[in-house]
Length: 124
Image (cartoon, rainbow, N blue to C red):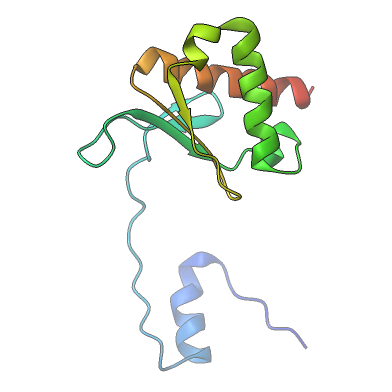
């Protein structure tokens, strides 16, 4: 027999009964990780990262097997439509996410809009 957990508001009591040695602390949701531009969040420069950046797992959005494949699709569109912007971007994609950084906000917004367009094209 499988015990299903209750809705979130009862989760602390549920866990407390199942695992009395656990100390559960709930924190309110933090602020959005940046500004939403289409289907991704665009993060502004900060002390640690001095450029605009996007870091998201795009495999499901773009219906590709890997984030490297997603990066290739983005770069192909940029090469065809805005090669000058492609030269100003930094890509550092890992297995779990595509990472793109840009010194200029408008370049990062262009990438976000391309990702959104690719996602909507694949979902039509």
